[in-house]
Amino acid sequence: MQAVTISLTQVDQVKQFVDLVGQCPFDVDVVSGRYTVNAKSMLGIYSLDLSKPIQVLIYSEECEELKKDLTKFMP
Image (cartoon, rainbow, N blue to C red; front, side):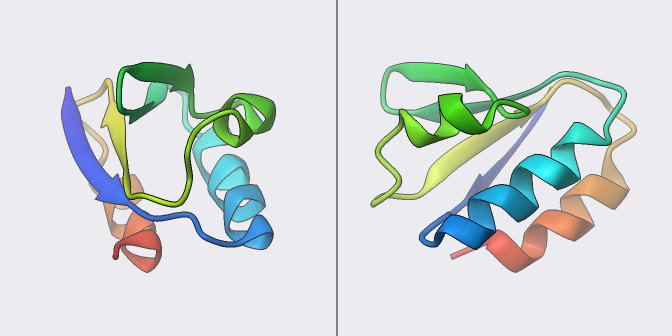
């Protein structure tokens, strides 16, 4: 498992993020405080407090391309 911290402050960023992780063949979760949701669920992400940075948990060791793509969401 690998972790990356990102910030989703705009509606279009959430859609871009969900589209990006939706293409991954492995599981990806998003953590905000004590809440964890599936990163491929737009509704789940909107249930989180997006005013603060969130942590992305990637359940794969072969995720360098995803981590590179996530840099545009890093604070």
